[in-house]
Length: 279
View (cartoon, rainbow, N blue to C red):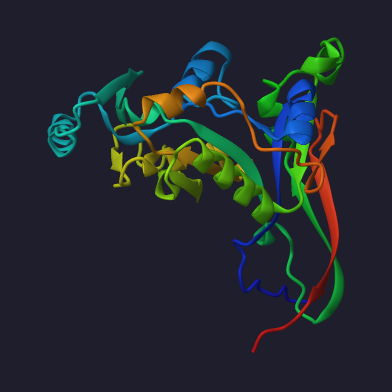
């Protein structure tokens, strides 16, 4: 039997976020939201490895250190960036914006329709999808479950599940605007994944994103994280300092729940949907 095709495969049902038990409790009870910066994820990757962290966060373009032609072209293109960073990793140079690398960001996993097999007949169907083990293991730096059991209770992993995303987004936006942010400074976007290695050892790439949208580009190695982000695009130092610490948007118990479990083998999602065929 042939599979059907979703009319809107990028629509999503719910969002998840891996955290620690202590933070999950505060998220649910007080709506505590903690923003981090791309630079903090880069630092984490160098200190503890890729997964939860990413050395290439915020890359605008890259070239091989011996590719003089592309080095000249890309440096010329980005020469007006007074905050341009040239980061060398191995034999490659990565161009980043120092300003954008310090912007507050909040990330979460989105469960998209495309993750479920679409039936080809109308009616009620049981649909299943899997959140891969790598998503949960990355957050815990691939710790063995036996090692996780030895952690203090507050440091053990938990998964936040937001059942009403639209309400969640609205409450975050209201909370951020109460700090003095303008709505256009709150960017809510999905991460796009590209094959950073697809151009060969000596290849180059420049995806041409208008800053700070380079913060929504990642290597396909992270595609299993199915990430969306809230990027705070502001130069207001007062607000950025406020966001260095958690903010509270009020209890989220009515729209979210928490599972205090290390899902080392991944998570199976089952739901029942009433499928309608479109003409």
